[in-house]
Structure formats: C-alpha cells, structure tokens
Length: 346
Image (tube, rainbow, N blue to C red; front, side, top):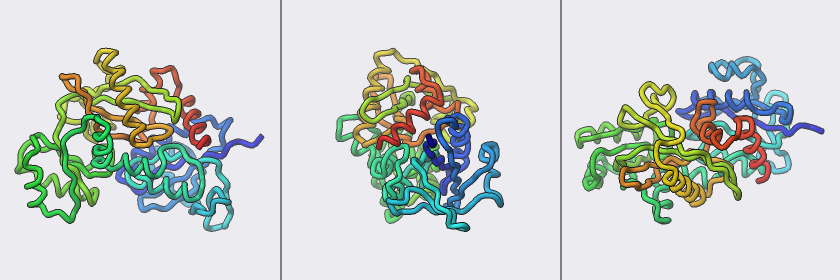
C-alpha cells in the first residue's frame, strides 16, 4: 500500500519567514514518516517555491536553499493534483498540503485560494476564513455582532490623512495599540500612552501593511485556547501569559526573556470553561476549520474580550498550541496525525 503524500510548506514571503522555519522543522521531526511520504517545499522571501530534499537541520538554520533545490510551480488544473518541477517538467502528485507558514502570504487566504482552485486538500482554515481571521478589525466586527466583547477600535488605510486619523481616535482611552491590520507575531505593533507618540506609531504600522487598526488596551491577562476539529472538537487547556513588560511583543513570544506561560491559566476552572466556550464560539463565527489558537483577554471583572485568531499557530515543541493540546493527553505526533486526517476529510 502506497503512503499518503504530504507536502509540508515552510518559509514564505512574510516578515515571519524565520519563525516558519522553526515551526516546520518541528513538524517534520514529529510527523509519522512510516505512514506518510513527506515532501518538503520551501518558499523564499521573494515568493519562489522549491522542492527541498535535504536535512531538517538546514531548514532550522536557514541554509536549505542551495544548488540541489528544484524550482517548482503548482498546477491549477484540478485533474493534476500536484506540482511541476520546472527544469525537468516532471509532475509530482500530492494528496495533501500541510502549510506551516505564518503571517502574510501564508495565513491570509492567498495560498489557501490557490490550493482550493487546484482542488488540492490542505490542513487548516479555508480561504475565506483565513482572510477574515487575518483582518483584525473585520474579525472583531463579526465577533462583536454575536455579543462577544472586543476592544474599542478604528481602522484606517493609507488613503486616510494623519490629521483625520488623529481626530477620529480622540474618543479612545489611552493606552492604545497601533497595529498593522493583517499580520502576526506582534510585528509592527506599538503601544502608546500619549498623543505625541501617535504619528510615529501610525507610520511604523503602515510600513508593514496598507491598513492599520488603533484600539484601546484591555487591562487584563492574555489567555489562549487551542481548538482542534470541525464537527467534534478537542479543546486544549487554557494558558495564561504572565508579563513583566506591558504587552506580549515579538521578543517575548520567541525568546521569553521576562514573560512566563502558565498552563493551566491561574484562574478558577469554571472561568477557564467560560473561556473555552467563548473561544469555540469565535472559532465557529469566523468559519475556522481543522485548527486554530484563539487569543482572548480576561479581566479582573471576569469579562472576556476577543483579541485575535492564529489560523496557523506556532508549532515547535515549546509552542503554546501543541502544549495546550498535550494537556488533553495528545502527543505531538498524534496532533499532527489528527490534522492530516482532518485535512484529507475535506
């Protein structure tokens, strides 16, 4: 019996390229090679796709792109179900794509749309859900309509003048966050506590996206919830981020210099259940499938605010998503096997 062919995608034309390499290396080390034939496809920062047949270590240290890699292109013909190696015109059939990509061009629906057009099954949210979840402002608007609390905010594009932006946010209460509207890993975000910092924060956010969101800071703890499934759900234990700094920035997310993750979160079990229920409701509202990590805020008044969704969360052995699910008794390889199963079902 032939093995199921799984193409693991890593890298990407994204500011989160390096983070993807670490996540993908962890996935490749834990995937069941006896059950699956794994093809490694690297995407460079300028958006070119290559078939890579070398060691996982070279992915980890970002030396994977060498003279042995082969430039490829996916076929958009539904009957093909795979990709061509450009130099030889050899066609390679695949059963499933497992994208381990973070941020722009990985989580935002572009790749998912390509795969849907080609009728190639893949792990994760579909094109529409991926796009909705990536748009921080639109995701908040949809969730708020279903009576889930969100921070008060405004969205702007580069067509808006700096003066009009500053005038419109006058009624927001400091401190504020100025964020690229699409992006992850806290890249491009500035917390501001005074009006004088507003202009520089806006310009900084616009260097990462053509649209930004300015929102009030929620005074509470940041909690997360891992969800796995489509009709029957496995919900991981709720975690809590203990911060010494004012927010969970990029440095803390990947180096943990002063922050600490508490798993389970240091709140009563009945409150953790409320957070799980809210997270699952968000997951369904935004049309998520297979898996996602839902991030929320929990206040001293026991209020729960929706923050954002990570449709392809970090996937290292120390990442929050797999560790939350491990609390249910699942191992890392079992999580990957379930994700592949869910992707193939679609």
